[in-house]
Image (cartoon, rainbow, N blue to C red; front, side, top):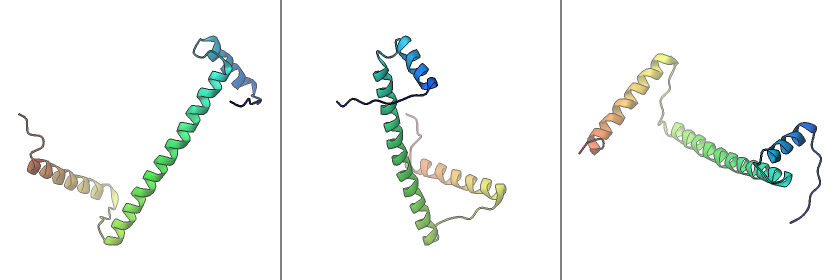
Length: 102
């Protein structure tokens, strides 16, 4: 494992000291290591999230190109669309038998 030297401002240095003093971490290296792991996970999950958003956007563009979409203007039309979608969903559940107890 390679050694690294870096500088921190007083605020971050104090934060590291408090983490070690609290017993949460055994050393400053442990604090920095955890911070970097979390940062790496955040970057990775951000990439996954961005890919999911791109996929949904592409599916939306394809639906628009097929004419498989509804234009909604204003709150009243949006409420009507939501009611219709809810009714369709309820009908599908009823037809599938899902939701039956027993």
